[in-house]
Image 1 (cartoon, one colour):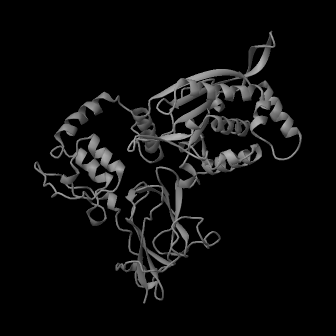
Image 2 (cartoon, rainbow, N blue to C red):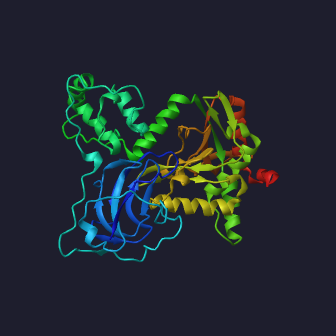
Length: 445
């Protein structure tokens, strides 16, 4: 007899507590193999295909595309073992046993599903049971004028985004009844409370004014997923970090000539971004206080031993910052290759959460947008960011004479808690000196 196993949204790592269903890869009645991806979800950090550790027939799906689910919420149920086809319409669910692969992300362990075509089982006696409605889609009942308050103790909510939404709108989470597994309070529950006039009079009173202020035809775009994560992180950076910015124009003619000579010598091509990254790691070796973070709880500055270099990349999903691990140990060729690999993953939406976390310093090349300067926001919890504008021909005094040279503007934003202006100025001046005269780098190679 087949066992119906329930597969729940796994812990995707890096402190993520929820994910949005982007696309189902299987339907009720499909036969799935062990480790076959069954759903594509979007977290606050990346798009991830989630493989199922059980092989069998899909008997139910939980949640429509666009639904947000917390970690631990049911994703699908799978009929495993003999008689799986007859169990496709069954509703009984058993708790998962110690079986299956145990894998939770594509790329960990074996994956036998890439070349397999989807197969559908149609039991002769009955059609597959329809997928139950998503927990997040269940509407919270209108709250009474005096909603019951939970007794003292932990509130059943695990998402920091849900807590923030409630806090910002004056919602008492203890007064809500969660519609998630085991009474878990979901974002939909808080949003339903915001829409209920009796539950939150203050929020309800503000709603008409907000709606009236928007002109007819205005489009409202939810700040969720990647866009919401970027908004939260940048807002936190502005709130917590007393940043300052300095900038300088540099003659990049010799740097461009050095790159041309490297590429003409044969071998893999070296990118301008890789040369700038190599300059950054050399500058951080001279000014290690800028490769640090501030521990507010301990009231300490933490200087970090390795340079994990983030670089800003614009994608169709929005701005992401992939991280090159141990950038200080890489040469220009290795940096070029890693930038290319991570950029391609970013373009296709296949960056893993681990590719987007753990950075200690960020290099932001906004010159690709055709602009000269910017005052970038520090990528919290880092302490500094180097911005690079476009490299373009401009009039420049070179060796006492006016000439047309390749000029770039460099901007440096830093956390004033970790250093003073002298250190920041020294860092930026060293970077500019290396751009103008790449031979300066030879001292550190």
